[in-house]
Length: 356
Image: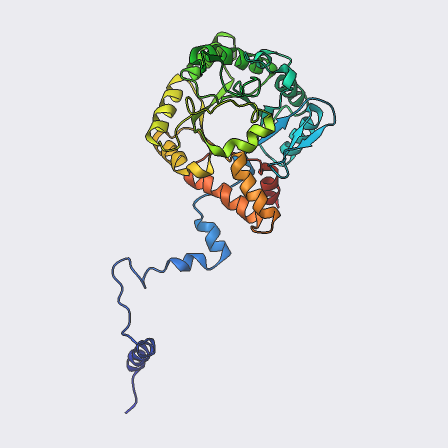
């Protein structure tokens, strides 16, 4: 007697089950084998269609270190591939960034030792290194955004972010100095002022001063959750404050153990007039980035710090990591956590990879 097609189908299923050493798997609702998540991962086109996050040059902010002089560049020893640039070379760097589609740069000065004092007087000089760089870059590349750091540590002889009175950083006197620093940067043409000092009340005070002086369109990026981190070492060397720092910054920067406190800091800065907020460090604090974005839904930036950069760059130099793959994966992690933009010393490299 010949078997029917139905019998052959049943026989085939039975044979497969025997070879597998078990009966055919039964699918629970929504479970395996009806649901096989690998199906969507098989082909590149499929992976691209279902990708949840995207990284582009629009997400990048490039920090640039400045030094005095002309046609001058000096390497930052702890940050392979990063250099301090004189103003004329910073202009060329800004042109290169703009050509790659990077929307903004951030300027950080290495102030001459002779110009540093306990009062951070040079921070208030309308002709200081940062202000000259802002004017020069705006004159050559008017459409690139310029972010200026509002903090006193590149200008103090003791390396702290504020003015020291009776052995402590005085909050209110520091805020008064930060207001004046912010105004000279705004006058120079800075698009975004980024107070990174972590003094209480400084966002509201700076916002008020900007409004009173006609800088109503100048944006504020608050370093709202800045931690007292060990990841800043190479940065401090780059701006020349590391060797000068006396003591630590635990009295005003946040304890790395705290998360809920970051939300309180962010809430206060938003209430005081911040247009955007920052979490720093970034990579080691992606949980904070996620919580901030989920809680407030405001533009949230993260800083891929000098120490985080140095670890990747040093490992890549030794052939331990594939730098290009690692840097793109790292930047995507920021996006996945909720960051709208990332300060990264890899900005040029990342932009080139994304463009190609």
